[in-house]
Length: 109
Image 1: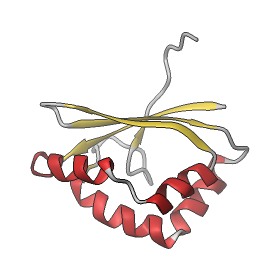
Image 2: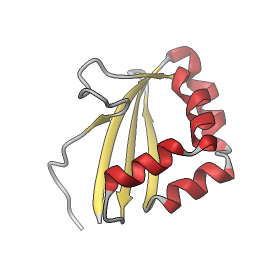
Image 3: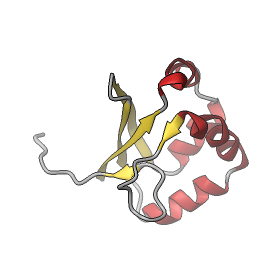
Image 4: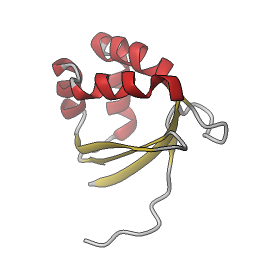
C-alpha cells in the first residue's frame, strides 16, 4: 500500500460549487476510484489560501496503469470536466501533473 498526498489550488469563486459537487460525488466515479485500487480517499480544504489537499491509499500493483484506466473512463472524464474549472493548479507542479504530488516526510502508525 502506498500513501499518496497531492495539492492544488481552488478558485475562490468556486468554493461552494466544489463543496456541493463533492457532497454528492457521482456513484460511477466512486466505483472507478475503487476499481483503480484507491482507498481512504479524502480531500481537505485550507482557507483562506484556498488549497485542496488530497490523501489516499493506493492498494494496486501499477499506479500509472490504473490512472490510465481511470482517465479513459467517460464518466470520470465528465466528472473532471465539471471539477477542473474549479481548480487552480500550482505553477510549481511537475510536467504532466494537474494535482501536484507531495513527498511524504513523516508517518506514524
